[in-house]
Each structure stands twice: as C-alpha cells, then as structure tokens.
Length: 305
Image 1 (tube, rainbow, N blue to C red):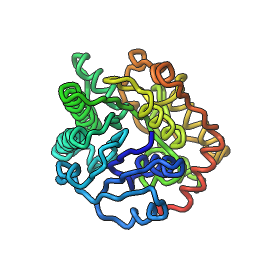
Image 2 (image 1 turned 180 degrees about the vertical axis):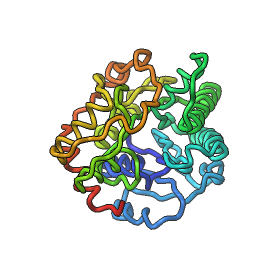
Image 3 (image 1 turned 90 degrees about the vertical axis):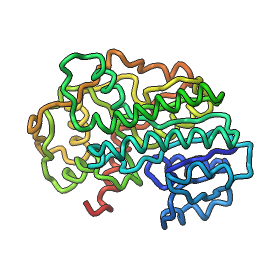
C-alpha cells in the first residue's frame, strides 16, 4: 500500500494503524472531527488531515483530488463501545454513515474498502438462528455493526469496489483511553484490588493492538473480496483462563472474584473459521502476552480511571 484513508484516525485502532503506516512511509489521509488529538500527526509529512463529521462524509470526494488511494479503512463509530451500545438510534445512524463512507470510497476511486466490525456480530448470527435466544443490550451495538456490514457489502458488490472486513475481539494496549474490560481489570490489579468478574466459562479472546494493526494491514493488502475475517488468535482460551493470565502478570497474589455475574455472551465459536485470515494473508498473532500486558499495565497507570 502507498496511500490509505482512515476514518476515526484519532481513535485507539485508527490512530494505531495510522502511526504504523506513517512510519513506513505510507501517505495517510486522516478523517476525523476537529480535535487536538490530530496535532500528534502533524509531525508526519505524509499525513493529510481531513476534518469531517459523519454528516459530511458524502462531501469527502470533493475535498480530495488524489484518485490513487489504495485502501479506505472505516473505523469511525459514534459512541464507541460505551453506554451508547444501548442507544439504537445512534447504532442505526452509525450503520447509515458506514454506507456513506463506502459510497465516498467509490467516488474517490479507492481500490478497496476495509470495514472494522466486531466479533460480537457472531452473537447476532446465533441470535437469528436460535429460537428463544435471550439478547443482552450489547446486541443493539452488534446489530448496528451487522447492519453496517450488510449495507457496505451490498453497496460494494453493486458499485464494483472491493470489500473486506475484520471482526475484532477485545483489543488492548497503549493509547487505549477507554474503560473497556482490559483497562478496568488491569487498573484494579494495579491497585491490588480484585475485580468482580463473570463465571468465565465462555470462550474468549483478547488481541494486542500491535497484532491488530498488522492484521488490518494484511487485510488491506491481501484480504479477499467480500470476505469478513475473524481477527484474533487461532487457538482460544476461556475468559477465566485469560483473566488468570492477566492476574499472574500484574498481581499474582490477588484472588479474582469469578461468578459475581453470570456469563452472558452467547457466541458459538464452533461456527467461526478462526484460520481464514491466516490462510488468505499469512497473518497470525505474534505478540507475547506477558510482555504486552506489562506494557498495558504501565499505560493504564498513566490514566485517571
């Protein structure tokens, strides 16, 4: 890749991808709202900022003269993975804006559109296929992500632009300012406090941001058209095993409180092709868990949580 466009370029994933590509000499068009976070990228001569709200995505092609952009990465998502997961109006608006992003990519003449989905979309597949399924609030967020995926795949097929997607499990690492699971657990352990957790019998996965960025680059370069890939490890553990691994790195003397909540995630991993991304692109997670968790622990200490 020589040139890419990234929406949500100041976010955790978008920003991490931008830094890696910029350091490799790739020209990055970074789309986001006006924010001081954009200042970080001004040191790169190959970074070109594009100030645009979701409502202005349709105008992006008129603001770019370049018609040789290789990949359009779409990360921007209003509300993120916060309490907004319950807000169906925000989530369905996000799906529509994703469609606007794809149409913009087509009008710019981009070769490939890469969508950042979530592994929670597999829960929606289970929801649709299982009578009596009991959906949790996260399913509203996941439905928005699934709707965006279907809209973009359909538009891409009919407009003649390549489409690939990565369905991402829980990411962790430096530059994550959120209060997502890993940061909350690590913060508690840094303070010597036992976090309250679910039973932990369900299969789960965590992906270090460095691995995730490499996976997204692999999808942009080698991902097959109309394919959506699980972006994570090929061999998985249970939630309980992963939390114990985190505890053993940060605060081995803390006794974790499993069973404070019931396991409520309902993803059928037996129906997920965990090897597809490796087969098609050669990507595989390589980060050392202990080392990256130490890095994450030091990062979380800098946050006010």
